Length: 206
Image: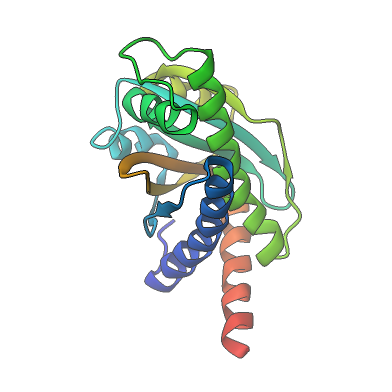
């Protein structure tokens, strides 16, 4: 399934709205202004996700995984390399980012940031697209990129697609980069695209 230019633009606009909400929440959490880049959106079959992510993020990573259900359901993940995870810890706790395994403090920070970003974007589906979505409790994983991708393919049937959003934000002159991945079945993706098109028509009619 290939997105048209208009569909991709509409999805990017919606996700940008969600990111704006996330930036406001992160600013409130940190007491500092958070600047989020305009998200770059692409779509690929799930079995090509690793190929598309490895140029940007590889090796040991930290990911926050949330399952969402409803008329549109799937898996959502925020994926960060360990360096970005350490920077986040330093920025949000004022503790030094040490070249060690991600400790309990860093885990809490990554989980909180992931929760804010994922809920802002997934909540956007419900609020703006008028689609009811339920969320599971976010789960933090420390693994390799390969291990995270394997967890998405175990015990799942049917062709699935990944909506990949390259995200970057600045806080206190430091830059953190990550990837937001939303994995959808063909049926959920079709419903999402139809909901996006309906939203775009409503916006255009105002």
